[in-house]
Length: 208
Ligand SMILES: Cc1ncc(COP(=O)(O)OP(=O)(O)O)c(N)n1
Ligand SMILES: Cc1ncsc1CCOP(=O)(O)O
Ligand SMILES: [Mg+2]
Image 1 (cartoon, rainbow, N blue to C red):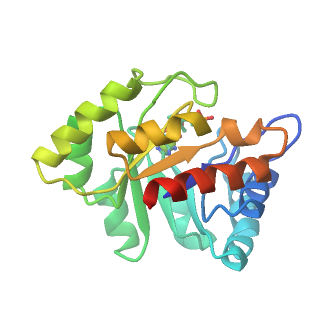
Image 2 (image 1 turned 30 degrees about the horizontal axis):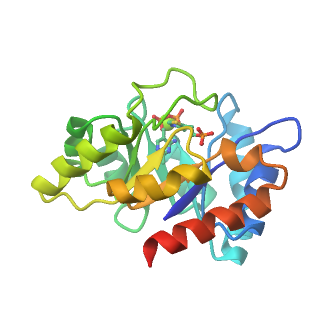
């Protein structure tokens, strides 16, 4: 599992960042547009929906469960300040993907009880991409939390996030996560589509 989280810099808009990742073979985009208006998010989501379908990629929105059905995306990623996942499930039903953010094992327990499809666990390390970061987990944090999940037979996929680069991926998979979410390391690479290809190869090797 590899999710690209959209961002913007002096070279790429949010939409262009998604197009770079799609060109590189990414099959799962999260449209995250912090500080954008509802109208801007809707326009970007409605543009990316058919593009992602052409690429055979899944598209989820960050935060905005309320816009999922009307924009036609595949689901939503919810943080602690967003709609509760069980409320989102009531709104969306079982055909949509709902992800939730965790920083601790207790967060994971709560999210699993609310029926999320996957968990974004982080941050792995410091990142400029998100303000008000939760405490950094580091590799030992992931190892400890994965062990606790196994003890309680929690099998919801865990996606590591936060300041992750290509070099970190084998270590994180060895710690027991099932997926990786990336933004900056792709967007800031000299050739983001090429970096996406490189990362997909690394992840494929972990899954063999
Ligand atoms: C895969 C994934 N994991 C965690 C997050 C963080 O979500 P959230 O805590 O809601 O913070 P914002 O992204 O909304 O700033 C995520 N977006 N994706
Ligand atoms: C959205 C989010 N949530 C925790 S860290 C993060 C940012 C991930 O982006 P990057 O890969 O650039 O650190
Ligand atoms: Mg959020």
